Amino acid sequence: MNAPSHGPVLLVHGGAWAIPDDVVEDHLRGVREAQAKGWSVLEKGGSALDAVEETVAYMEEDEVFDAGRGSFLTSDGTVQLDALLMDGATLRAGGVGCVEHIRNPIRAARKVLSESPHVYFVADGAERFAAEHGIELIDNKKLVLPREAERLKKAGPKQRIGEPDPTFSATSSHDTVGAVACDKNGNIAAATSTGGTLNKTPGRVGDSSLIGCGCYADNQSAAISCTGWGEPIMKLVLAKWTADRVAGGVPPDESARDAISYLHSRLKGHGGMIIVDAQGRFGIAHNTPRMAWALRTGSRDDAGIEIS
Ligand code: ASP
Image (tube, rainbow, N blue to C red):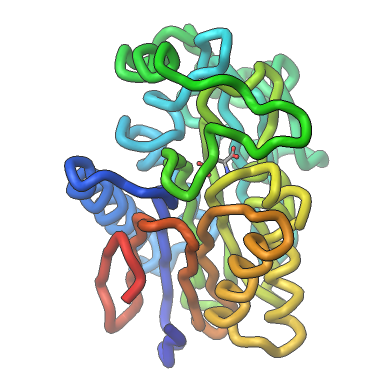
């Protein structure tokens, strides 16, 4: 799926799993709307960084996805959110982990990127930083949906050491959101936001908000956002692994497919990935039955739940 275009490119994902038929339309609507939001930034000449922030913030507001309000619950019944965004032009990055009182963690992550000499804040410190930079703190209950309380009640047993995570198969629900973009100046950026995994132990952080794991961007290689079973993705530092292949000359679409094959062959992991480089070349790969995605370039406006 290489784009000949040198104009802007935006790719969005809304999780990779066996999205059931009855929620396919919701997922497609969600990724299409988010793509339109991000594209409106790029078509006005805005930066890739602003575009991925707006795209992901929009999806955090959409209760269909495991990000912001409507996220999966921890075993304590709370929402704990992780998010990261990264600017490929400068390698500046901003991340927050385990935040419980922020409606749009990607906005807090952007404040970390833009207004802090640091890269990553967690828990209370992240919330304090966010509040000091104008982000409202809210009651955790406002992020919890009855649908998710029900889902938690039905959750299976937790993973035991040495065994695969029972909550993570190729078919189980992972609705993390992400976006990658290339702007008209050839700068790229990536953003990923998640509520993590169902029934996670409080304090657990997955791949999504860790640099080089679930999110990475460097103009000299690629911008990448991942979704799926976080622990294997983290162990393989999969986004950076993929970016390094692009830097080594492998086209982005092939690098993404290689990464997802490697995820499975090395650790039996499941998930998906979106990628774009500074030439506007892009790719989508997943080894789950479905993955919600939307793409916009100067000549294409597409969305789907499988890769044709
Ligand atoms: N990767 C996320 C995590 O492990 C989950 C997902 O992609 O839905 O936290």
